[in-house]
Length: 322
Image (cartoon, rainbow, N blue to C red; front, side, top):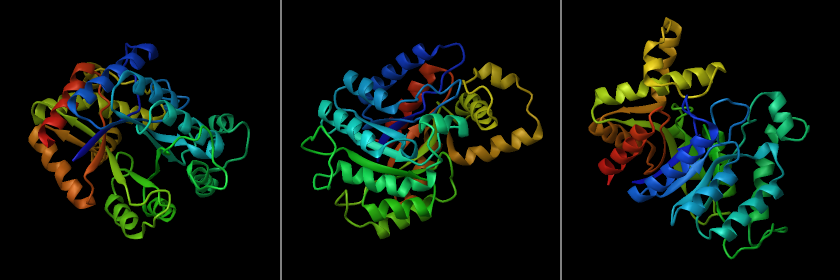
């Protein structure tokens, strides 16, 4: 099974953005030593607690501090930007770190309408233009495209389209680009999406299909230990969805919170987006999901407060699957 990290750079309470960025570099170096193949960065704006707002810069920073780790974006908010400019940034990264650049792009607005408009320099909402912008990006990155961006590297970076359902899978398949399914956002359409992508893939930017899924995983020493760790992620995700403080609370703070029935129900429902448990449970559930999706390539998100426990969770996941 191929394993990578998708990092939203969720900032633990008590740490600064600068300290969170430093921990991110340390984590990337650590997971490379464990055998993880890739490290991807999300793009979030106007949040108090998610530090990754420019995945291209974080890709360069991590690539410069690691040896062979592939770095990627999960993903660049393509509707808000010029496809040509995105292509030039990716080629610049490819020139610096040949063979290590993986670009994931998506159609999210990046925040509320004010933030979306600021990102797009005041242009009208362009979310529906995502398919055309993705086609343009393919053209600018392709060796035989009518217009190719610079610098013109020997090889183009890998390109993936992110999605949450069948329509996104069809688009990726039609253009012949890679596909990443966001189980950590929508756990209900993964099987169908992967099946459609695989069945309908036509050679285009890529000569063969390339797909993976992203999921929250916390692997503790035991099931009980994992549950203790997961409390901070449960609270964090609930706060994110409510538009509250999106920094990751400590386990103690989360444990002392008096949740109402509606909040508890939401936390239980959110667990469908995660695998939480000791080594045996995590292994069995991830293998079962891999079989269901026919997908052996995973990006792991772990947004808990304790940095050392986060590192150990990633270590256990690698140990049980390799």
